[in-house]
Image 1 (cartoon, rainbow, N blue to C red):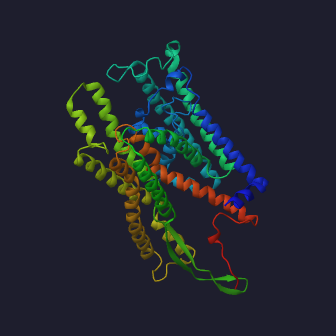
Image 2: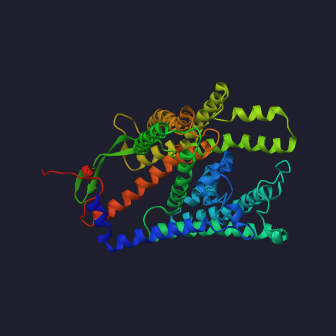
Image 3: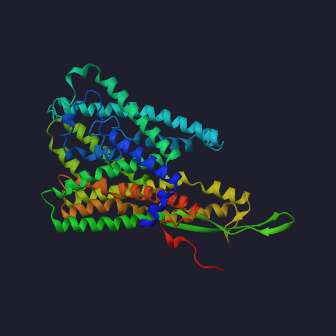
Length: 460
């Protein structure tokens, strides 16, 4: 391992790529501490971790903690991710966009441009929510009139705080998109993914402090939690790397004056082809009722029913059937979105037509409709266990923290979001992809990579 790391820095091109990537990520982390003009940075530093529960906690996770610091990077890269997802869904419904995507580089550039326009619109809308959050903290608006952090917004800028904050937050997101593109072009790995990765890693110290300082935690529980999280990381690697390979044969092809049998190939279908998207969709959807109920309870007074409704959406509820309701709904949503996103990603009819066009076929299956049915059958079979595995991975942190009683009432949200299924899948997926790119650079220059077992040894 140490020899491999030393080899990385012996290659000037690879060394410059890695140092450039690290520099860009450090710039991102520094930017998370630059507050919006008009926000009192001294008061921001006193905002407690319990503010990161619910929907805010998930957004703050992807922003690297910048949301509750009211930073210029408060929205992180999430508007761009949301715009990309919306564009993928729209392309399924609008044939002209599908045609544009198949036009090559120019078509992809146009779609990328539309995605960025959508990002600007989402930034403008979501920045209003950040501004409203700052107002509620500073003046108590929407929080039963009680200001949690009075003076958060400087009174001297209250008259024009809205346009300044909107411009600052939108510019911050645009800057992050640019940083991500620079990392992809001049650095190593996927820039957008690495920015999210750096944001999650940046939240870890806060989560660990919340765990160690919780009144209900003890040394044995913390040790058990760390061991279980290591196991979860191993399972995440298995889920990320799991592939079902469907063998393919091709007919003979004319090469020069001879008929040559084409080499057999295979179609790799990932067990978790939807990746982390089902968890993100499910989390957003299940947190939406919480956000609505919280808003209604702040407007509707002290009706006891609000607390009961909220408890049904609390995974740490002391009433077992309330917590069970949350787990069942969450699992069902993850399974649904796993099938939904897989259906968007794969078009069995198009794949079957392409195989028939180029003379490929699955052994024992006729080209055309039978191949399409076979691909659909395989996708349905591998998506269900993948979705169940994904749901188990997402629910495991809730169950572990509840069972060990590690900050269920105080820091539970911070722990779940930082070490939960979403975070683990992103961290493992990005780390593996980046390591693959580094290893490819090493092997290309005749150096040994990280995984020696993958190299073919011996001679014929």
